[in-house]
Each structure stands twice: as C-alpha cells, then as structure tokens.
Image 1: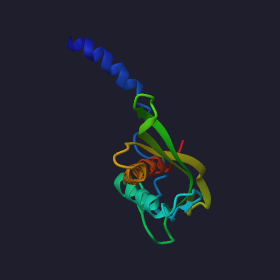
Image 2: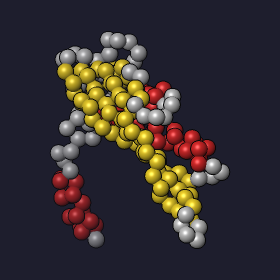
Image 3: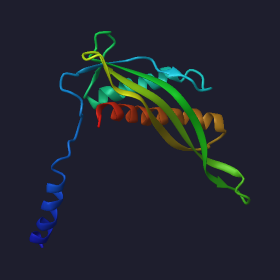
Length: 165
C-alpha cells in the first residue's frame, strides 16, 4: 500500500516542481506606497476603507512593505470602478422576497516601479466580493457586509501586483 501511495505521490510532486510559490516581483522591490484609491462609483466615502484594507493586506502578505514616503520602490494607484449588488437567494411562496445578496466591488489598479520608471501592472481590473443575508433591513445588512468585500478586493489587488505573469 505504501508503494502505491508513493508511486502516485512522486509523479504528482515532480509535476509541480516548476511552480513558484510567493512573489514574482524582482528582488530589489521591497516597499510600496499605496495612494488613496479614487472612487468613480455612486457609493460615498468608500475609498479610505478600501485603501486601508489594501495596506493591511500588503502588511499581512509581507512581499512588499507599505510605506508613506515618496521614495518607495513602487507606487500602487487604484480607482474604484464598480459596485454591484446581485440577488443570490429568494424565499417566500412566490420567490419574491430576497434574502441573500452578493456584493461585488471592482477596482482598476496600476503598479509603477519607481526604480525603472515603468509600469509593472497597468489598469488591471480586479474584484472583491462577499455574500450576505438580509437581517433586518437591506441597507444595514449591506453596510455590515462591506468590510468583507473590501478585504476580498484587497486580497485580489495584492495578488495581482505581486504575481506578475
């Protein structure tokens, strides 16, 4: 039985040998300055929360250290370009009562390498999302779900800029 498991496991691991976990950024990039995202949606005052979520995600990820100084190795800029709420589930005898939604936030991001004067990522659209149930009323439920969507968007932003293909 052990031989069978090993005979299946070794080729599987060998097939993954060329994959690289972590960043594909050049080794000389250590710091990132995150500009406050701009907002082109009808949602008011979301840009600070989204920017903070991206900075927090960079800290958690550890590949690029967020700094506030203008001499950072690279500069991340972003624009919030979409805000969508979709129906995910209904209840009631006629399926007319919505009880579950998906909140989707989209942003366009660019990463500029201050060392080379070139864009490493330019206008890449990423999105974050979360599903939520209506508890009480819709505006309060959506407000409670926003931080989850922002964290998911931040994860996608950081993944997009540290995993340049």
